[in-house]
Length: 258
Image (tube, rainbow, N blue to C red; front, side, top):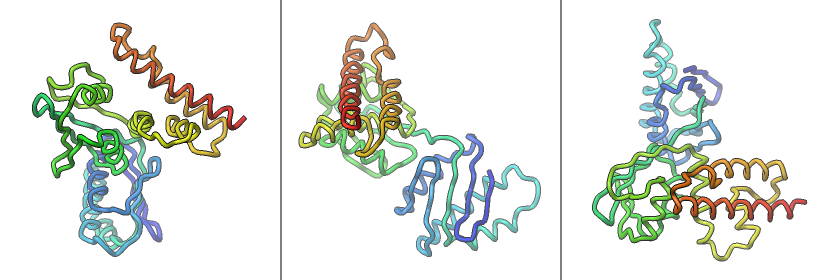
């Protein structure tokens, strides 16, 4: 870990995956509504508000920084705490992985916890499980899981019987985002074909051929039917339909930009 003291912001470069940055990120999302994550840069803008949380965060970062250093870095700690009001930029070395823990409550109910918390991921889950998801302080609860809802959960966590055990799945941000975008397309009945195509690929009007091709290849690697077990007919059908939607969207958008 490196700590750089800029004129208007404190820059922390996380160079090791051993640093449990997901816990820090969870703390940031819960306590700083203005925080943003752009690629691998987690940023809290300059502000004099929420001082106690800013001080706690800087103490935490300092403790991680000083843990493996033998020399006295106490002077740095004092400097950091005096800069609590300045912007805080955390530059990550690796993509953050998101863990979702699914726990059976009864035959028609499940609890799920997203770690670390992320407003965009949580929003996507709320939209995906719109009518059966309740949010509480200790997590989210899925109620009234009938056959279709159970199938949706099964596809999400890639197991056949979702109500037997406790499951723990890890995703990167792009995998979660891609799944939630594609699975919600059919709900947007008022979208035009072009809008639906962009929603499927996760692209935007004005994107060039190179961008479209990159997104198509990325999604194809995840949802191509050849990626699943040949013995699971239900999973093959699911991935075949997903891949067909992706291919159709890609062809529509290519015609538009040609």
